[in-house]
Structure formats: structure tokens, C-alpha cells
Amino acid sequence: MNKNFFSGRVLSGVQPTGGLHLGNYLGAIKNFVPLQEKFQSLFCVVDLHAITVWQDPKDLIANKCEVAAAFIASGIDPKKSIIFNQSQVPEHTQLAWVLNCIARMGWLNRMTQFKDKAGKNKEKVSVGLYTYPILMASDIMIYKATHVPVGEDQKQHLELTRDIVQKFNNDFKKEVFPMPEPIIMKSAARIMSLRDGTKKMSKSDISEYSRIMLTDNNDEIAKKIKKAKTDAMPLPENIEELENMPEAKNLLTIYSACENKNFDEVFLKYQNRNFSDLKEDLIEVVINKLSPIREEMIKLLDNHDYLQGILDSGSLDAQKIAKKVLKEVYDVTGLNSVS
Ligand code: TYM
Image (cartoon, protein in one colour):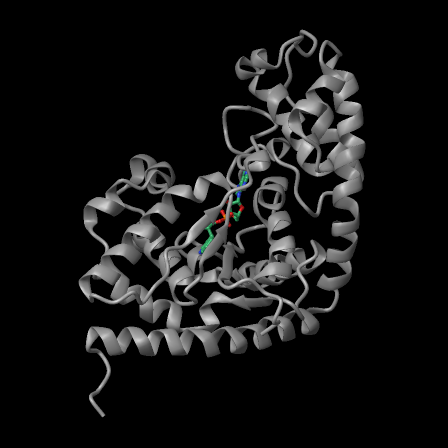
């Protein structure tokens, strides 16, 4: 391990479900990059989470490569970080079973993401969708991760993970697991839909105009930003007024996150100005940020064997850590044989 690393370990995961959008990038992946300089870091393509809703097997394989390509194109260096595939490290699911027996039904029943995803269809969704947060806790705990960079929508899952860590350590009277800290970048914790500033930007929105994908070309980016919902009135004089203008706030947030600028500073540049000015500049800012990533992704996706090689060797490296932690868990829980 690099001697200059801080103590602790970073882990995060991204689902390979039909492409990544600007929210995934600004809320999560962009923030992974500096962490790999400070901590031993693992970034996981969470295919087992993806199959909690139906995935066409051929699409799933392609989508896993796309997430790996997005990681690398965004600046995650496979020589510094472990990039790997969740399903190839079976210790995740082995620990998940133990954690199923630690977590309480009442804790899971509070998960708002399950309620949102299941909607009125609760009886018909997979059991996996319900127990999804326990597998996520296992992803984190199987590496004894201390820092977990995520967007705000994952905060509740992180709180559940912390509850599971605490109960596990208490039940077995041993500090087996460290308490993982979420790292949520306030500046881009929740990127909203371009069609409705009160809804999160998401892959599942029926309108393609609601999100900018990392693979969108410059024309598509420009078209989507031009069509983004805004008010007829100019941007306000006072920053407080933005609280009632979710679309304006979202566009300014995207601008400041892409440019790594302070939100208030960006607001001052556009106060009292027309939305068309902001949109014109935002198109340039988003294209500047995303086009090098897209071009690198296209190159990488052309080299499937390289991406598969990264995921395969990353999975072996991840498994070395996971095996040791699982052994410790089996030891303290009495699941290992005595000899
Ligand atoms: P997923 O695949 O839905 O999203 C990947 C990451 O992107 C963030 N994100 C957003 N951030 C800001 N604005 C948005 N509109 C937006 N949409 C998505 C998510 O918060 C996430 O950080 N359960 C996780 C994957 C996971 C995981 C883990 C994460 C599985 N195991 C262990 C951390 C640690 C998920 O579905 O993310």
C-alpha cells in the first residue's frame, strides 16, 4: 500500500443500468477521483444491485463495461484504485446473508428509495429490491470501508449501514467493523431533472430531455440545455428567491459543479440576467467538462478486452481483502470450523 495514504479505505459503487448521467458524474464519480490520492480506494460496478429489477443479460454485460469506462475516463486510475465487478467477489453475498440476520425488518421498512421504486406495486417487486440496502451495507463492510462517497439519495442507505455496523459490533462484543462515514459533496449532492427541478435527475425518467448522459454528443447536450425548463422571468436579484425557483437553482448548481466554482459566485454573475445568457454559457461549460470524458469513453469501449482485464484483475485484488474480512466475521460469529 502507498505509504502516503491516510488510514482508512474508500468504497463506492455504481449500478450498470443503462448508461450514466450528469447526476451520477457530478454527485459521485467526479468526487471519487481526488480520494484515490489519499486513501486506498475501491470502486465497484454493482451488477448484483442492477438485477433487483429485470436486466437483459446482453445489455448488462455492455453496461458493466460502460461503467468501468466512465470510471477510467473520469480520472480513476486503475493503477491507483481497484475497479471491480461486485458479482465476481462472492464474499459480498456471503457477508450479506450474515447481515440479513443482523438488520431488522423495521429498519428496512423505513427505506424511502424502496417505497419510491416499488410504488403501488409492492407485492410484485423482487425480494432483492427490498433487501438491496443490506447488500449495499455488505459492499461497504466487506472492505471495512471508512469513507463512502455518494450522492444525497444514498444517505439513508448509509445510515442503515451504520446501524448494522453498530449492532454487529455490539452483538459480538468486538469492534470488527469501523463506522463508515458518507462523503456527500454539498455542491452537487442532488442534481435535478432538466424537465422538473423538484425531481432528481434519474435514469428511469421517461423523458430523455430530463437528463444529460455521459455519452451524449455536443449537439444533444446543447439541445437538452436549451429545452431545459425555466421561468419566463429573468434570474432573481436575491439569492434567497432561488428557493422558489428549483430549475434556476439546478442550472446554476450544474454550472458551479462543472466549473468547480462557488455557487454564490456563479449566482452573482447571472443575477437579474436572462435565462438565455445562462443557458448559452452552461452549454459551453457542460460540453467542456463532458466531451473529453465522452471521447475517452468511446476509445475505451472500443477495447473491450482491456476493460474486462481491468475488472478481472480488480476483482482478484478486491477479493484478497474481502476474504480476510469474511474469515474474521466467520470467526466471531461461530461460522468457521474450530480447527
Ligand atoms: P446509483 O447507481 O443509482 O448511482 C451512482 C451514484 O450516483 C449518485 N447519483 C446522484 N448524485 C447527484 N444527483 C443525482 N441526480 C444522482 N443520481 C445518482 C448516487 O447517489 C450514487 O452515489 N445503491 C447505489 C450503488 C451502491 C453503492 C454501494 C454506493 C451499491 N453498493 C456501496 C456506495 C457504496 C446506487 O444505486 O447508486
